[in-house]
Amino acid sequence: MATAAESTGAGPMPPDADGYLLRPPRPRDAEELGRLDCEVWRATYRRQLDPDVWSRLVPEPFAERWRERLAAPPAPGVRTLVAVAGLRLAGFGVAGTPRDEVPPAGCELHALNLLPVHHGTGVADQLITSLLGPAAAYLWVAAGSDRAVGFCWRHGFRPDGTEQLAESGMREVRMVREPQLSPAPRQ
Ligand SMILES: CC(C)(COP(=O)(O)OP(=O)(O)OC[C@H]1O[C@@H](n2cnc3c(N)ncnc32)[C@H](O)[C@@H]1OP(=O)(O)O)[C@@H](O)C(=O)NCCC(=O)NCCS
Image (tube, rainbow, N blue to C red; front, side):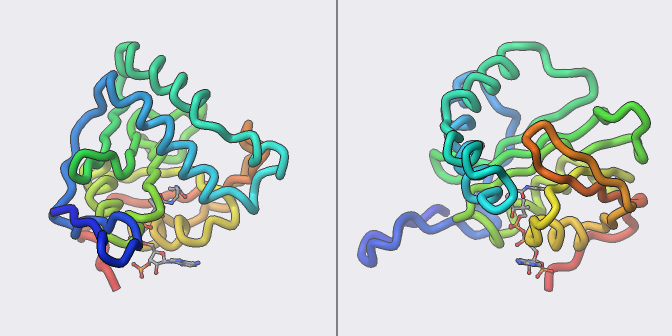
């Protein structure tokens, strides 16, 4: 259950791992997903993005992309899930058909983004497990995103030495995993 730390003024508390619901997004989620996506980018990529680009990150272009995505039929083989905590979205994940011409595995984790208040709750484990199961997969992660790399490492991904410069200007490293025989243990 979601609880609020009203008496301390510390802001809303995240639920425990059982308190999240995973479901596909609906068109009416677009505005909230835009705000969430923008907040995750601002919180995560301050060091990696050009300062001008970072300071111009605002929710509306993110929301516009979500409106377009959610109004169109889903791309073949690609699945999106949102994590809901109470009445609010906590994060989302997207996985499926690779976007690379020569992918190193048959499934790509396109995105996995959680609001910072939900980090460490276990909901990212729920999202990645629901999206990928034990399948072989790969992803691109921004160089220097140590928390994300630690998370991916725990889920069996290892850098394969390939890097690219993303459209955003960030350097990204590719991580790949074999099919998983057992679930990732939490420390
Ligand atoms: C990536 C993300 C989904 C992971 O979810 P999370 O709830 O934060 O992940 P967890 O807490 O389960 O795991 C993070 C791991 O990295 C470790 N970690 C945390 N900070 C770290 C750091 N600075 N350096 C190295 N490892 C770190 C944690 O100890 C944990 O490992 P452990 O479980 O073995 O102890 C979430 O942090 C997020 O949305 N980040 C912003 C968006 C992003 O970077 N997306 C890229 C996804 S590929």
